[in-house]
Length: 112
Image (tube, rainbow, N blue to C red):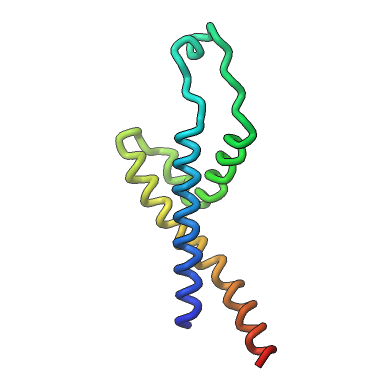
């Protein structure tokens, strides 16, 4: 059981790091709108393939608790994002640790 908790903790920490890394990259790389683009004078630049990839990584890693962010105001967005990322990490850690633990237990049992 201790090994399962270590695996779940490792997966949860890796998920949390990947989530915040994708958030940071998305925030740094995403094209910001100028006032001339907002009013339609200049066209919006198309996002690069890297930006689209990072956006999808952020969306996938933000599931399933990202639904809680829908009703958040801008003042409460960052605390809600932190709470959702921690909850998502716990869920992803448990869900991915169970098959990893089962497969590793099976291979260790067969090898012995």
